[in-house]
Length: 176
Image (cartoon, rainbow, N blue to C red; front, side, top):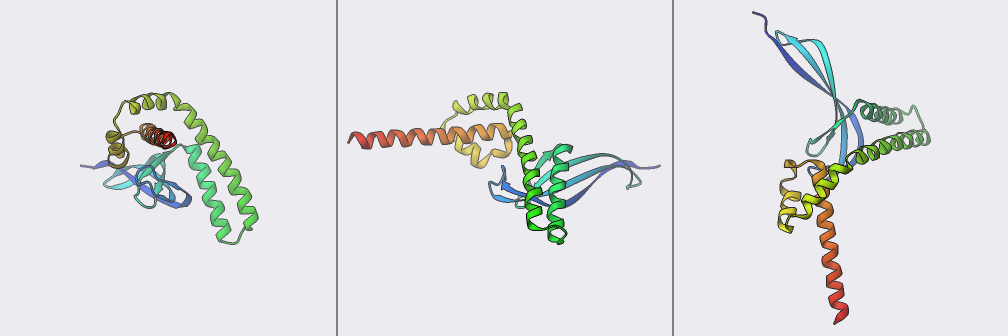
């Protein structure tokens, strides 16, 4: 009897960026990860049939899914950083190339955000109906249970309520 199965093989490609993790809330380095999927025969990877691309938080190992297009941009960024560390390019060349790729990545992020505006508006409506205690519990203790759009809406609602309380407090002080 021949055993057939599947196997994934991760490949860390280096650090590519530093930003806040939506899971652990640390401003930390992110690594680039490519995961190849294989069909196995007798536990030996034989036929590749897919790739998955991720950014991975160096602190908590939270993974963000990347499209192939985004993966290619981050891989270019990783290559530029490696060329700089190997003294193949100057710091000025590095900065120019990194800035250009960062512009492309930011444009992609903005288009992704615009595509999810409807989802965000629905989440804003749900967040506005929650109590302060519920918002804080979700944001700090149960964020892993919610989609990123809901976490962003909750964060905005918390900040909005804090501003409202500050304004009321300042108005009360001015009246006295």
